[in-house]
Figure 1 (spheres, one colour):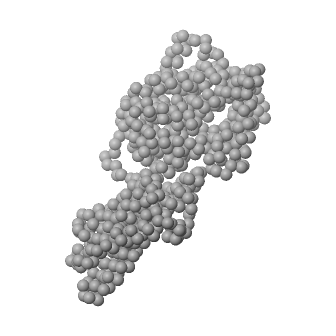
Figure 2 (cartoon, rainbow, N blue to C red):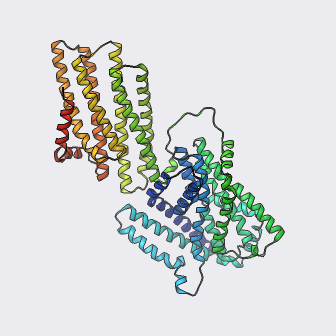
Figure 3 (cartoon, rainbow, N blue to C red):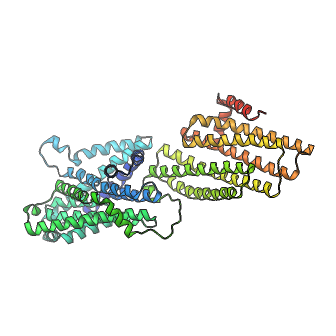
Length: 581
């Protein structure tokens, strides 16, 4: 093996790792909605969780990526520790799919049709299709599909380059002696663990082992302990990803480590006893591409059969190793690890925006009620709610900006833009609820009361505002297009009510039916309510625009007022409803 073979080996390894990385990333993006649906169907049933982990890992071709996602889900509250355990077990088996794909490179036959199954035969066609999609595809889905095909082609060409580069090692005595040394089970396990920990992918390290098997010097006796060590090495990624997470996320990473360490130690002991006492001849046979794939799958199946019934014990062990803190403050978190799967990160963001919306709307409704029936405890609750909404806006705003820089589909990009706008309006509605509470406090402290006529007008305005808050919330949460179309007419009615109430107040002031001091509070109240209705209008328009990929809010509002056939009809109906005596 000369210097050029070494360079070819390095180049092949780089292509292999690069292809695996970009293919996995594109698969995650392309199947993001599917992953979201799978996640949504999760239950506490261990079998369901196991097959979920198996399916997701088979799709994205990386147990490390799946486990990191699981740590992120647990940290973000999307998944319980109990669910995570069975998914992690399924992920370990799902990662063997990569080795089976790579084993196609070991096909050898004089038959033309059989040879067509070799990756070197069909990957050029995949690469051609991929480059056509990449150059001429207009949608993000086509470009992701292109990246998957090109990534797979790059991976397989890298694998072929590595195999060709190491073929000369077959006659090198030092290389032969190296794999004789790896027949020591402990040494083989350590080598597999260290290699996998460095490249942080058991699929990639198994692929490298398959490439080395092309020399004919990798026996089953050396390959099996290395495969066992690779399962331990892949835990490094999850352990690193759990730094800075909550206790349950740390426990998920500990479960992953415990599952692989216990499984490897038990079966390594069994392997050593068999090899030492029985000395089966098969362990001296050369392991090929297919043999390594089979060994990888059998080992992971054995680990699952051993520990799947003991999943509750793994949970107890994790809780023992990562005990509950004496006091743990609740903090809303969107784990940055979810950015590796943007569609799932977006789903988590939407869930928190829904929570923020309900908090802000409930707070504003409570503030209106406090104007009529003052309660100090209620006022404090509104202020605490406003602080919580502010905190959510800060967290979501920062995270959504990061998410917007990820590779997103057109639909996802529009949703991120919509959520960024929505959180600002919900936060402002929460601010206005505090302003309304301050008006209620001023009325109470100064023992002021509005006239009976003013109270009736205010009740009508409150009722209209409560309805527009419900409509705008339903528009966003349920993506209700019918409710969205009804928001703007009602907002115009609230504007009309505000103007009438200002004029009525001036009349009462002139007639002595209202004081100047109460008038200031009156003006503040109706101003805050009118501005809240403006934010409700914005919310409805954002949802409409996101569906149409339109970013011009003012243009949409003008269109609704001038072109919508329902606007005038809805406006007159609401005006009649909220101006009746």
